[in-house]
Length: 164
Image (tube, rainbow, N blue to C red):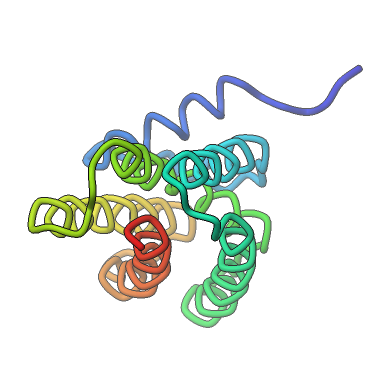
């Protein structure tokens, strides 16, 4: 039975997110792959549950609304256009650093100064990785800051769920 899951591409996309300074391969990133993002979204929800957060259902609602907003925004900004599946895939893969934040919240409180600094760094990591991938996949040179801002807002909401 062929499910169409390419584990090599999942691994390459994961490494691209984990190494934000690495150049993103636009051809791999332009694929609609939802296997990896679904695993990351479930892992994020599981770590929230371990931390005693019962907002598990909000993760999927925020994900859907955030993907729809980014889909509309990127289609307005890019000349080539982008599919909803590609946006959901990139945003889901870039949720990986947020899993590290919510894992940290299982052990320590994020409501102090260390938590604020760590949370700001993770939001920056997520939004930088997502904007870099969108820029390379959609050939939008020079617009990374314009794409990073709404990504930071979206990942900021996920961080708020992790903190409170």
